[in-house]
Image 1 (spheres, one colour):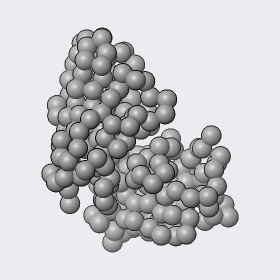
Image 2 (cartoon, rainbow over the protein chains, first blue to last red; image 1 turned 120 degrees about the vertical axis):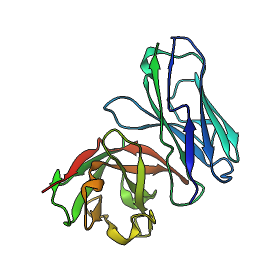
Image 3 (cartoon, rainbow over the protein chains, first blue to last red; image 1 turned 90 degrees about the vertical axis):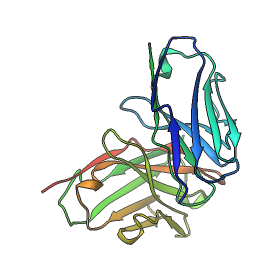
Image 4 (spheres, each protein chain N blue to C red; image 1 turned 180 degrees about the vertical axis):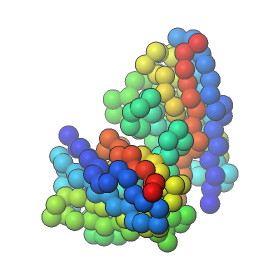
Length: 107
Length: 119
């Protein structure tokens, strides 16, 4: 099975900072990569799919890029409400594996 | 607005079978999409368990395949999960969710239900 890794596992940044999270697949998955945001005690929320397509209603400060094995999620200007854990998910084929998550908080 | 709600026992004994149901409102399961189960052990990451289409076609996570059964009841607009021979490692918040169109990503989620495996 394809394994998903994320880095860093956690980060702390200031409001308005640009934040980048990386997700790596152990084999190529084309652009079959999604990102989710899970706020503390809440349900995961789909942010991005097809590596770079923003889900409806998601703020434009979120963006995704990458293809093959290396992907990034960028928050262009970190806001207090972005404090959350972010997960990537590959979906080129079953099993639809999630990454271990990156916890983002405010410095 | 599509809404999903999990229901089932919050406590299951080791070696027994965990049974959960997801009731969908605001959308007819028979209209399409795959419907799935995802779990999250306390303080840990997400694990896809399996998904089902209204026709009954299923995809299961190979790591759990020998223990899981997912079924659908279109007349009640529900789908269900059974996980057999549970251990403490199956303690988790269990979510039901809908896939997004033809993509195997999850756009609508239930609130989740914590299932604890303990004697």
